[in-house]
Length: 536
Image (cartoon, rainbow, N blue to C red; front, side):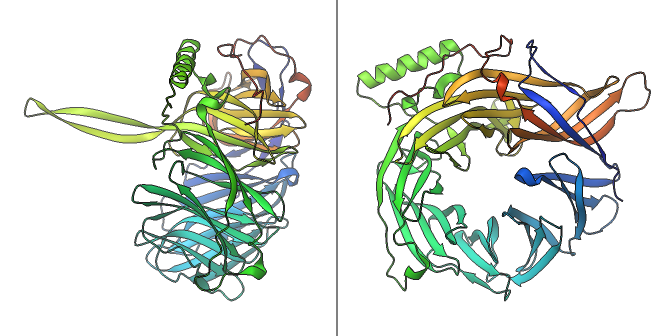
């Protein structure tokens, strides 16, 4: 059943503490009633100035009807452009999705077989195509990327990594060479569309020595280049590539000192691309190992604002301890877990954003035979502590750093919560929490508006939000954010139960207000902010 859409100007008020001027302004709002008779999962994909795509995955509680996708595309005013549906065949389950400039892709897989299908949705007109094939071998799939008419699937078979290419032309599947080895884990798969290259990143442990490797393949799946970053001193945990030109790229991520997932700092490395051209495919065992230029390792203690998430007394103790150990010639070992975002190109070079989190556990102790206790401990989600942003030039030198404290934010699944929006020299960091937007504004790496909170108070004169969950925030285009989630809305002087809706709100950032430091009580004055004075 097609749902009735309620589209109109956003009439609810955003209140920023006691400040009379709001730097976020409401622009448009879309509501979809939530069905009480079917299971629905909502997925929102921003398309820049082309608008937004909404995917509602629907299933029936009371029958064995196959799952279907209901796609709707809206323009930047949240007015519907087109709508279409895709019914998933029996025994197929959605596994992964990815998006390119013109298409949205969904990978579907049969549970008890090696059969796969790729659904391709044209973002311009809503037309749908489907391509079916077979895997070379059974595998658990964790990575899915598409380049032109080939899909790349990354996963494991018998605990060894496998990456396969699946052609939409002849529906054939083949295994990419050089990966099916013991003690190797897939880290990431990235696509370089302009140069038609596929980068597969892996990490391996050999006799307590960790090694991070970037393998570059041609569009057809030929191995072109292998870059090994030995982990004798520093072990790379993650890697994000940003091509600067045809000759070189920057590899950025976090590292540890002991082959663990606990981060000691961030690194940036320049990689020469001279061997990575389709005409230089590597044959047989003659793999070209391309050395990197200087790799810069930046310890968290070298960042000026990394510890600003702490309360003042705790931060002072931490900084004093770091200074004392530095005077004694000792290093400080950190145990931070990082969720590193895709790199953000800038005129100077790039920005790297990472969120710091830790798994949150819950457990109970039970008495046994009067003295011995047993413990039931399980992970209930992830807690975020702060996010930090680093600016680098094209030579890989650190220009500045800053951070955004995150308070009381937990998530059952680990995913990116903090969003970054650029408007000229202004950078806005923001994240959603319990129906509110928490933000911080930087100009040229310096904080000009510290932590502020913007609350959703009213929808209309006689309506209010009584419940909010699954709040999400996405950086959209030209100074606009997109907020979405589930709300229950009640009407004053009405005995009817609150209506439950999935909402999408367009929010506009007002740069004219970013330079004035409000006296809002939500402003964080606990820690001073510094900008790196010298290049690393």
